[in-house]
Structure formats: C-alpha cells, structure tokens
Image (cartoon, rainbow, N blue to C red):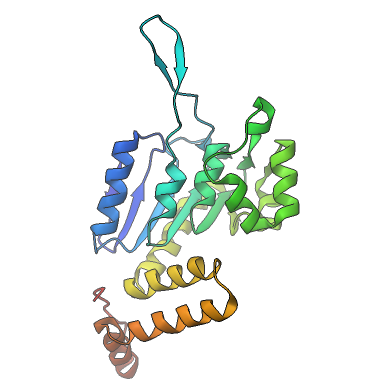
Amino acid sequence: MVVSLNDGVNEPAGMARRSDEFAELRAGMVWDEDTRVILLTGSGERSFSSEADLNRVVSGNGEGEEIEFFSMAKYIGRIDRPIIAAINGDAIGQGMEIALACDIRIAARTSRFGLPQIKSGKIPWDGGTQRLTRLVGRGKALEMILSGGTIGAEEAFRIGLVNQVVASEELMGIAMKMAREMASKGSIALRYTKEAVYEGMNLTLEQGLRLEADLYFLIHTTKDREEGIKAFREKKAPKFEGR
C-alpha cells in the first residue's frame, strides 16, 4: 500500500509484493515529482521483513522446480530519492538486504539483524555481501555473514549498520519527522547529493570531486537555487518546486 502525503513523503508498507507490482511502484515514485522522500517500513508488528520462502513452480509431473527470487533491493537501490527505513522488527535475510539498500536506517530497540543464509548452505543474494561490507567494513561483514548469527539493535548501531535506535512506540514518529524535514529541502539538491555520494564511491577521489563540482554547477541552472537565495535574503522558508 502506498500512502501519498501532501508534503512529498511516500510510505510504501507491506514488503511482500509481486515483482511487477513493486516495479510499477518504483516507476511511479521516480516519475512523481511530488515524491521527495520515501519512508519504507514493514507491515507487521514484530518483523520488518524476514527471509522469504523459496518460490517454486510445480511441473506437470508434480515435482517442484526452484525459480529465481525477486530482487527488491535492486529496485530500491535504483531509486534516486532519499529512502528512510523505519525498521519496526526483525530484519533477517532478504529483509536485512532490503534495509541495506535504503539510505538511512532507524531501528526499534527490539529489532534484530542477520544474514543466516550460510546455515542453509547458501549465501546472501540480494546485495548483502556487497552493501554490508561497504557499510560496516570487511571484517564485521564477514563475521556476520560467515557465522549466520543475529545481532541486536544496539550492536547494529555500534557498528554503523543503523543510524538511530529508538523505542518501538516512537519509531514512526521519529522517522516521519526526519522524512518531513528532508522533504522540505530542494528535491533536485536531494537527488544530486545522493548521486554524488553513491557514484563517488566507485570513483577515484579526483573523479569524485569532479562529479561533485559538475552537480553543484548544474544546481546553479535551477529555479530552486534562485528560490533558496531569495528566501535566504527575505528570511523566510523557501518553497522549492523541483525545477
């Protein structure tokens, strides 16, 4: 379910979607200029999202045939708007990989995190080996993935896996406040900042600095920049239009 708010924040809830539905949802977010920030949360009370059951196609002779999982993290990672994950419960397996694809993670104090695929003779497949390593470092990522164990929210905060840990009853209020604050900023600047950070990670420092400068100068061609300067001079809140 998608709830569109007037201030440009969208809340996709209910993590188990068919691939075509989620792809359509992503496309709607990208083309909707009013969507500035996305808040992603689980639909249950105890789980953000857990490892999905392996999908099977039943053949004519009644035997089950494994089919490929649908990668949700891939679609989330391609969205150019800031994405906040409000982790209201356990993020295990693909659920954790989905959280890793978000930009900011706020977790309830009761949440747990883990990539247990190794226990079933498998490995993380939806970006876990890559995104976790980039977020917490190689040593801690290897420890979590090779052991298949889980950690609590406080430990996740200590190693940099999540940005904040809050009481369960305060989670959505705090996440919504952050989303609203972000959404009040210029949407072009939000997208360019995200692009500079993520793309810059794959470049040399010199190339990253050049990308940052190019995006900065592009901002100078927008009406949002003019509005920001005007609002600063008049000492009032800017009204950015994403142009």
